[in-house]
Length: 157
Image (tube, rainbow, N blue to C red; front, side, top):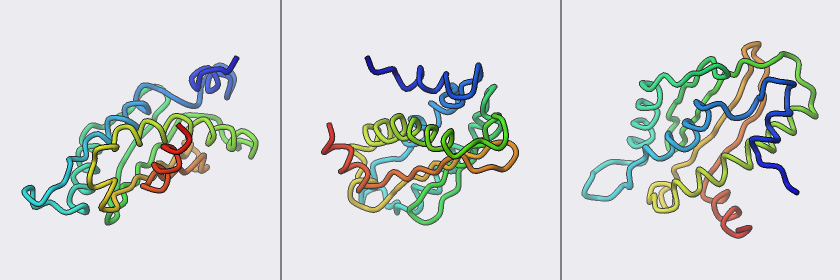
């Protein structure tokens, strides 16, 4: 029997699950759903939409017991979400690989579902990068979700 992503994450670092705190789930779905469907009537470019998403995300100041900070930055058509988590330092490559795998299982489908009708994402090049660090500065994972990731996800469904 396959364990859920949440169950997998709970065994990650002892009693402190590294994966999904409430703030992180909000980041994944809430942030990507902020993007409007861009049309000519709106006169908004993809870059402007990306900047707006980052601005709204940063205004929300999303933190919880696991998430020390979460910020977003628009870089052209890319939105980079930088998340700093309260987890132990010097995690092994095996733990980091496992964390990234669990994150991908959660982030990619949620981001793809949230953007299935988003013209900016589907046709105009908007994409998301989720980067995770611990409070000691160690990079835990980086996941990019773009149209190619959407097409791959859709093909596997």
